[in-house]
Image (cartoon, rainbow, N blue to C red):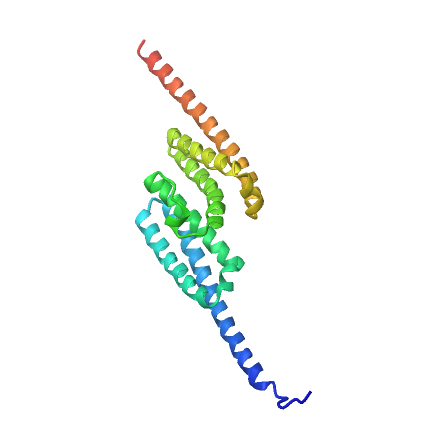
Length: 215
């Protein structure tokens, strides 16, 4: 075997440049995904505060980052399989599902939200916790009926999720979220029951006082 050229430098130089370029792309994706996650988290906060227009604006800004990610993935498909990207999509799904429920009283499909199916399912599991937060806000305002509506929605999501037997095996983390959701629902049901009893007792006392005064 006759080796005509023993120099690998041109080849390795090219590879080094490709790796350096890829690393720059990876850093950009990480920055974008961190920002998308922050925007989605803030949108959840605004939704609870009834600042729905601002929440929509934040989610629109986050969507632009995911569109940008899609374009990057055309040249670097491996970029969409990082944990940070998955976490960003999951947070984005959760925030959009919650906003649709609060604003329109309906569930939106993954295609409408622009999120992968797995991120949608995991985000849906986390929405149960956000609905508990909303139920507690309603209880503080004395609106037991609204809190009960939140509880019914929590139970609906939970029952639908646990009926997906295959998903529990195929979606990493879903079983844990289901276990957490069950405890969250039980705690919320207890809070609502106590408040309902307190409200009923308070009304009974007021009626009794009114009756005594009228004698």
